[in-house]
Length: 220
Image 1 (cartoon, rainbow, N blue to C red):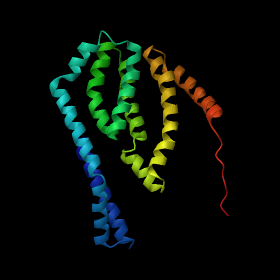
Image 2 (image 1 turned 45 degrees about the vertical axis):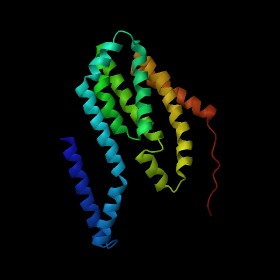
Image 3 (image 1 turned 180 degrees about the vertical axis):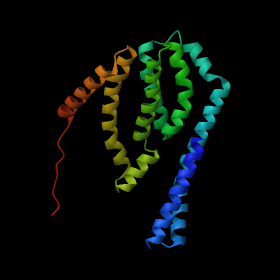
Image 4 (image 1 turned 90 degrees about the horizontal axis):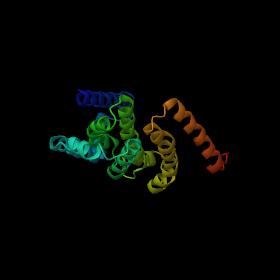
């Protein structure tokens, strides 16, 4: 059971961290436990979002949403555009909620049967599944309410909005290349060993054309 394994791993890591802090006399046992409790408080909202996402996923399953979408879209949606649509939808949901795992739990039960109904080939299903994963990660990376984004700005003492504003251009650049030279060609059946090298070359050219050298000042 993955949830049990994750809980046990987190608990064991917490115990090890507390013991290391106490044995190295960095903190007292009371201070270490207090810091641990404080850290737990910071991830409560993430747990709530995940719980709601899992609940929504359960409701979707009980309502038969996947079967409904398959019946509605299987004969009407162009095959080549489905991986891109899944990627964009995953990105939007993840950006709005700030959680990639929650997005995956919502979209994965819908994507796999829909992709199989549209094109019953395992390679196509894998591409659509990757659209869920990468779209969710992209949206989570760019979201200002994502825990990873918040921790990144906090850990580097960077203004949070500035961090979001500056990193989103890099992410969008890669996302556009992934769509144009990855998911759309994959929808047409282009193999990965063709599309990935082309995408790498385009990315390199784009960086050379659009990129600017950052001035660097040595600190004496």
